[in-house]
Length: 158
Image (spheres, rainbow, N blue to C red):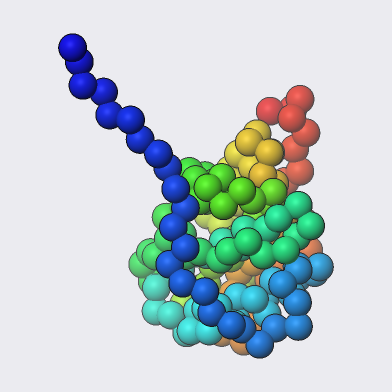
């Protein structure tokens, strides 16, 4: 006889809060920023890079928001697994990621652009597309989608 563990993976809801937002649906970049500002109000003032994800339903309703990584003053470590493991557990159909720049400058770095390309590629492969990646500065933000910094892949190209 051999012992083999039988396991079950579950998503555990830590808590639910009420937020003063007009909608739970993400229709545009301003909705994403409003959700981030409500759920993570101190993100713009963090002294470390903090990366968060918004997980969305097939109708772009927010399923949940989660901190994915907390880094150093100029780096947040990010792998596709960090983003998509909780996305899969959440039953997400799409995701939006965001991170702050403690310097206050919302200009995407070369590392930001290459990390987002890897995340976008992985999202296409597993069927959970990355809709946008936001860089949050002290008073402004940059949408990498609006700046055409998120590559669009077709499955047959991967």
